[in-house]
Image 1 (cartoon, rainbow, N blue to C red):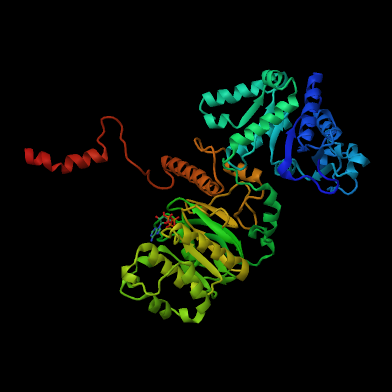
Image 2: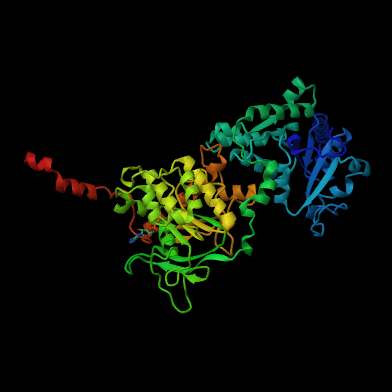
Length: 570
Ligand SMILES: Nc1ncnc2c1ncn2[C@@H]1O[C@H](COP(=O)(O)OP(=O)(O)OP(=O)(O)O)[C@@H](O)[C@H]1O
């Protein structure tokens, strides 16, 4: 067992979800006790819902009686009171489920650090903490709605590839069998893939009797181990043990509310020509200094237009009391602040940068010698050869020269429009790291539009979804900025954002999450656009035109008009 002075780690902990009622049949309590005892015997720590009553109390007491170690996690509204030394929000107890902290620990148990109860603010926090502290997996004993919900959230996280831990349901009295049937039926009906069926293991009476001499605890431990082996190598990016540390050092932990506003867009509507549908409609956006904002949207959503307007490349009509686009409080067109760098794809099309110029001369001509240290760092990072001739290099190499040139002079705001598209993955990854460092160390601000989401998960601090020239309101959008903070604060926020995993995609890597989210948004965007077109809003219907029967289609008209072979025949 764990020593008296050091608490057992999450790596050797298993989480048990169960009811706070005992159930009608005494067999439930017997089995809960067997499971609690077996976990302790295995020298694993039990993580559970922190309550005193019902199966919760039984499983915890059994683990402690077997000299096990227990961590209870209980929301403050469920705790009748908190033991001294436990954090509490001071909320009055609202539920009878709790009183866990009153019952446990007994002084003897507490002295030996075998029982710890953490009082948390909400049910969401409880689940997240229980999951984080349980890297052996999750066991479901009988219970009610709360237990179902906890079990299913863990299954969903597993399906999304957020974790790769076993989920084992103890089917005493065939308690979970109706659910097993439901899951099988969902699979037969094509809602759960065959791999999805493998995510849950049911411990069956027959197995317990035949192979474990009627000991449900031993059978459960074996099932967890068997599932661990089976799931080895499967995706599960969430490093629970590092998540606190990561959260405290991650740039997303920057208190953006304390940062000055770098970019402010207020009620911005913009048309390229007065008779054209506006390319931007009523855009409102506030981006704090040090932020890295990712613009996500379909082709034509307005990303480039917004970036160009931010760069002051086009005039936006202003009035005395309305300046739609400002940076650090200044009108970007009429009194642009120093240090705005815009890098777009059009640069590479300019004949000048395709002429026979040596890269070294080219960089010197734009003042590269003034920032020698930055220039050299970028030359290394972007793997640029100073002796290249601009007319005799590949598109990707030309892009690297552009980036080197554009990034040499220290900038305060960087606007990137798809310029990483033709970089190889190594250079792109190193570049993103460099850009991140620039925001963290120099307080620079970045807005980045791209359609490539590989390797991008850790990059943005804010995400903006654009559709048909406007910003789309997303679930957990921050009111002050009109953006989605990234990465999501918790795994439940993330799963809420993603909704269900797209069919056929059992495992989504950490990297794949942004792509999954973008795909979901873009599909919704297309549906909405098409519905608008059908209703005569938002332009003509795109795609092939199919006419009603007997009516000549455009392509038939064209064919009949220009079918020269028939003309020749005649
Ligand atoms: N020079 C222009 N003149 C007229 N309309 C334009 C012009 N440039 C863009 N648009 C229109 O403005 C809208 C937004 O285009 P924009 O280039 O900003 O989209 P985007 O989100 O950057 O797309 P992509 O992902 O393809 O780069 C589109 O409907 C487009 O047709």
